[in-house]
Image (cartoon, rainbow, N blue to C red; front, top):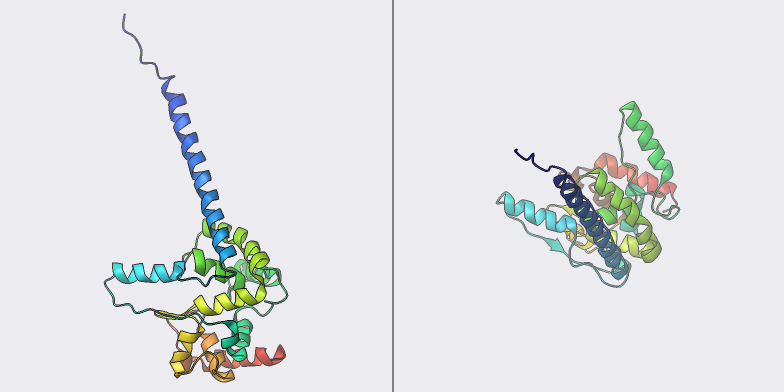
Length: 234
């Protein structure tokens, strides 16, 4: 009499493997989140030596065998022209000092534009962009957005508005290999401390697409930014 294979013992083993895998993945996600939160806490006092975007660009250059020169110098907020600070806020996040990490009004407008197929602008705040630049690079995914949403309140609570602005202005990509206000102002052979109102508006205008835009071509958008600055009392 032949014995039939015992398949019942295989099912629990397979189930146990997947349960262990899910548990391992869950623990890994939690640990990575805690690491990111710890980095945000340390960023209150320590200037980031690099970011996910910096690393991403280096890898892209290596993969495609293209030359890459990185210019990144961190300077205190007090050494960045108020005109440049105001221009970036007017261009990127007009309600920066009013919201707590998310601009729900802009999110609602963007969602409505998505439904109508007429999306013309993003709704990410400076805090969201800071978190994205630090940890996630320029890629888009639902998982990335979910992690970003949970880290933004941590950044707001731990860092405060002035440090968030200081970090963002220093790490944001302003062109191929150009990171931060000090490096960006070299477009005009100036320091971030001395850049004037009109040039600041032109620099702020290239932030949505820094690899494609150049400040000298930003006549129309820089005029809009200057108008917003005036309306905001700057």
